[in-house]
Length: 90
Image (cartoon, rainbow, N blue to C red; front, top):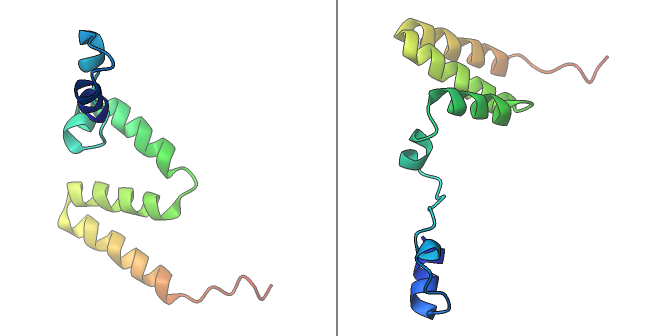
C-alpha cells in the first residue's frame, strides 16, 4: 500500500505494474489466503524454541476440543507456576 501511494504521489513511475504491486501487510485477511496447511507450518516454525508460544498454541487446541480440555491446560500451567524452580541448587 505504501509503495502504491508513494508512486502515485511522486509521479516517478507511471508503470501500471508498479502501482498494482500486492500489499503484504500482516493482517487476518492476508494471512487467511495462505491456507491452513501453510499457517500450521508457520506456527510450528515460529514456536520452535519458544515455550510461551507453544503453551498458547496448546491452549488454543484444547479450547477447540472442549472447555474441560482448556481447563486442564490452564490447570497444568498454574501448577507449573506454583512449583519453585530448584534447578539452580543442583
